[in-house]
Image 1 (cartoon, rainbow, N blue to C red):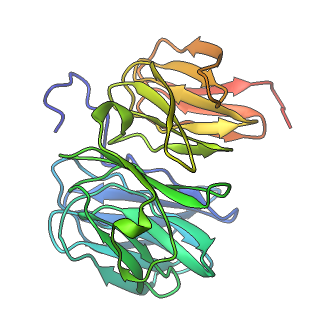
Image 2: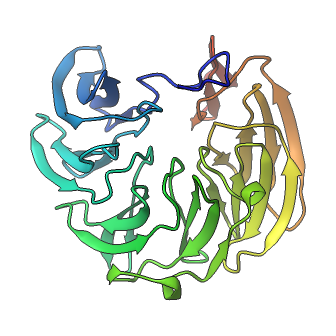
Length: 309
């Protein structure tokens, strides 16, 4: 799939599992079908479902998200695309919403309480859209602004805006209001940039305080003022596939070569620390109880104090 690379960064099981503390939910590709399954903490399979076909030249990546009694997975692909909600205990299909443009995407929806309603928002399928996760019905829909997306949206409560970055073939990064209904237009977009070095196709961005941070696939890290979209700084950090994560007011950038750069968001670029694993990293890190977990190309790393609270 990735002809220009000697080692492909993706597999048929590139998505991130989700857990509710009782079961672990996974989604992956079995040749031409999406598979969603649930396992207990002893590794015993509780259920497995195949909610629909999946065809994409770049494989499968969409991670499951949990909402109330549901596990929800994005099925955008080069065919009859859909978003599906399954019962967390049984795998029974609760709702399945078709997507109109039949175009691949790899985005994980985010679920937030915004504008007095529960919204499940995602980019993909030539659009940015919000749905009700309880029934799969559409709240609002923005056409475009480009064809394909990988990065998830993020929300900044101080600016009260959603942020989208993508994609292919055009490059866009924007702040987006969330109180629309039906098809929305530019009135719901307070700021918008179309510069490749300021946007990300694959890595998801992050919101931190007054700021919104993104790293382009080529490795240009950018920090924007969240409310106005004004660029605060830009720094070259090396090519990236891993999404940004944060802890204790710091943002972590992990490059494809395994170098982690820790940055303090602000008006000026402030590098706090740098660490090099010496191994390729394409997966986003996870942070839990004072420890960072990083899946390298050959090893799984845990960084932090033993027994950290």
